[in-house]
Amino acid sequence: MVRILIADDYEAARRAIRRLLEQRPGWEVCGEAADGLGVVLKTAELKPDLVILDLALGMIDGLTAARAISRAMPRLPIVLCTIFFTDVLERESQEFGIRAVVDKSEAGTRLVSVVEDLLNKGLEYSE
Image (cartoon, rainbow, N blue to C red; front, side, top):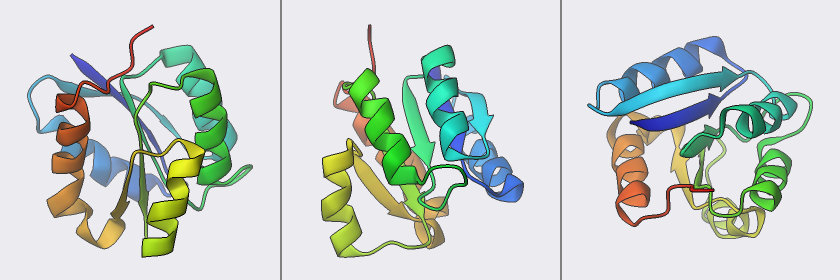
């Protein structure tokens, strides 16, 4: 079972992403966080196989959260799903340990395939 952690400050967005991901057999959302600090703490606690987070999170932003997560678990794939998508953000996000950036407006068509690609490349986290 692939375990995915979702972080977004909007409950409706978390719910939509959860529904999208849990349609895939063998995938489950193991937890949710509403802010950047919460996703860092829940990642350490739940040890998911992949994290999907928003850029605009409370407490600490998505990039700062990704950096903290990547330092603790460098092999853990992180996907940034944001309405603030730009080519520059996509390039610079790699410095924070983010493996892929998905524009929220395209999440319904791209997010599952991006997650699947990362998992198929053998990038899932293992201790």
